[in-house]
Image (cartoon, rainbow, N blue to C red):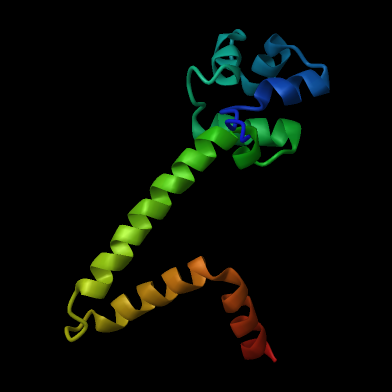
Length: 126
């Protein structure tokens, strides 16, 4: 049985640290703990600077602090990239943007096959 990924592990890391919501809010520059509470309960997403601040406080990557949001975002981007790749393959490769199209497709291939691209880069460095 698979369990749903929590949208936020902020509460877990805050509890592990022993800090209160008010203390976290103080570190973040908030006047009270309400935004921290909303972030912990996934009622709202913090702005980027605050998400990075959580990362700095807990020394945990943003993608691990907000795994549910990260996974949803990753899936959306993967779907959009797949559509973009299909569109690039269907486009004409004879115009002057052909080299840029080829470059984009190569990047997408490397992105989808990181092990293959690592070995290619290692051989280029040798």
